Length: 391
Image 1 (cartoon, rainbow, N blue to C red):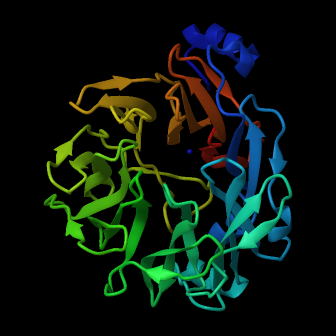
Image 2 (image 1 turned 45 degrees about the vertical axis):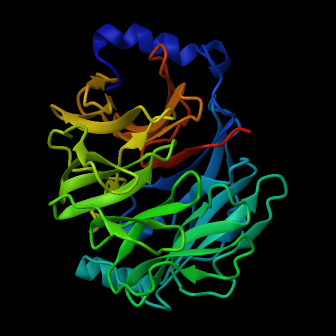
Image 3 (image 1 turned 90 degrees about the vertical axis):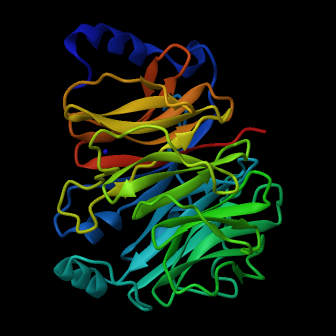
């Protein structure tokens, strides 16, 4: 999850002195992300329970915790998961795990999601009032509810995934958490990576590591035929004409796209040996890290992704006809992860592990200038960042 080569050190010093207002275009004002400890002894849970949702201004100032009261119970934590379309409401995941269940997971090197051992809910937090609303607890369907998002073009509708009978199901619900509807209720296979098309009329997800596209109510589901055993994390292009996902084998999968109807499969780029996950802990983690997937540019004409170059994981951009451009050439040992572009296409937000510390950076895509926006000390990290939408 050494800085730059010596020849570039002067450039780094110059860029570190710039404020966002001095760069050629101003990014959105806030970035939501998660801070945590990453080297505490005791395994995964000992570190995960330190996670706290935060926001910071895009110039690196004004850092503050969000809905900190949600993590006051022992063995609980918060994660920043997204924004409302108008940028006024933060989506916050709140997790809790019993120490007994966490110990069992460490001993068996696998998750055990059971009632009484886990509780994960998704909250809507008004940034002005700090009021937190647990919409997944209303007419509860599961003890584990994640992936909450605002349904495009329908301000009264939300989407999320719920764990039911050891399988994950895509749900829609009203803005107040009522009328929860299982969009894949006939399935006994694990469904994940749920998202809606920009017009709100279609959905995509992967089920048993195969990608599907369907109507918004879950009907007329079509499997995307790739011939590969591992297909993961489909996302719609901003113009709604295409769906992108990674496809291949587990830990050897690459960005592909299809048309909105699931046809016209095309491989865009190769990640050159990158496993597609970034480790977020410096202690042994039985799960192995956090998925690091490609993202669309705001104009739907290119895709940003990460790939291995020697011992680094660098940033790339590829056009839809397969022409790749390497955006970073970093000091040995650098890894980049979790990309997100602004709606105006001018800025890229990402994490980068340098000198052993995971920090967040913003990059001006026009001139390649970069600014660090977090100042995490050794033993702590910052990840899973999201631009605040602009109206």
